[in-house]
Length: 337
Image 1: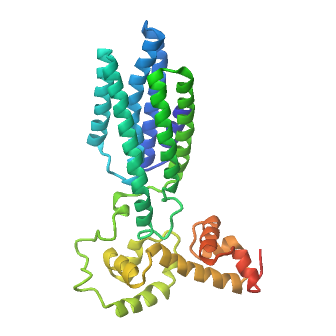
Image 2: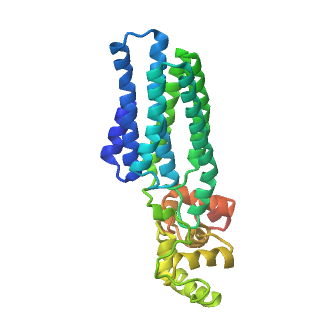
Image 3: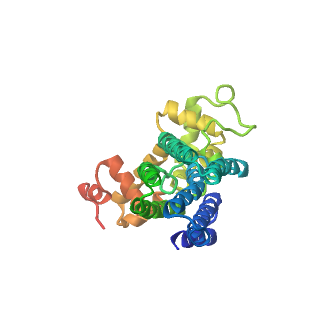
């Protein structure tokens, strides 16, 4: 019921490739759970044979973990052909183990699942820090795009993979039941974060080096640093463009009449900061002025300073200033909420 309900919610109430992929994966897990009834009622096998058959069919769900994980890290990478190739690999391994009934084929299948799963998890753990760093060169916000939560999920996933291997080798029903309980818990966590995750396009996660074909090159035709700084102060800071809550690097580049490459390089090399840090420092400066010179509540200060939520404002403020917004206001003689 859990997978059916989750699949329905993602299919009906969410939009975007990631949500639709999640709905499809959950629907596939529904089919895998329905096979339990089919195997028990249509085959006259011993208990051990039934358990082995169930394990062989269960491995078909392994690629669904890859589909969701890779889509989070590299939106759009999994196309129909790649999905089919991954499914075909495990279909061949599973089909061979079922058809031959060979223990050797069965254990080869288990080994392939473990290697595949661990490789996927390690890939994710290596890519997540890079992904999160790239976000700060592209977005002025990270609330609905950060994948820090996926680190915990992948660590739990590796532990569960070992539990699944033990249950598959020993055919222990208790270990198998525990694995299924934990898998539902883990998928519930994934479903929660995926439902909140912004729909990113592949181009959104490209580095600032990806420019329009008509963009100017940094070295040849872009203005000198002092000229660009003057434009930055007048067109971006002076007009308070940084107060737009969903601001992206591309938006700022359009405002300044340049491309993402030059702008990102300028912020990194000349100002020694990231787009995220630069914009949010400006927002914090604006917020500090509001805290000291007005009686606005914190949620209004957060909104007028360009933050997506009060919780984000509190977190960023405390990290940068070393105190809460209320403490800052009180320490400087302002009014607290």
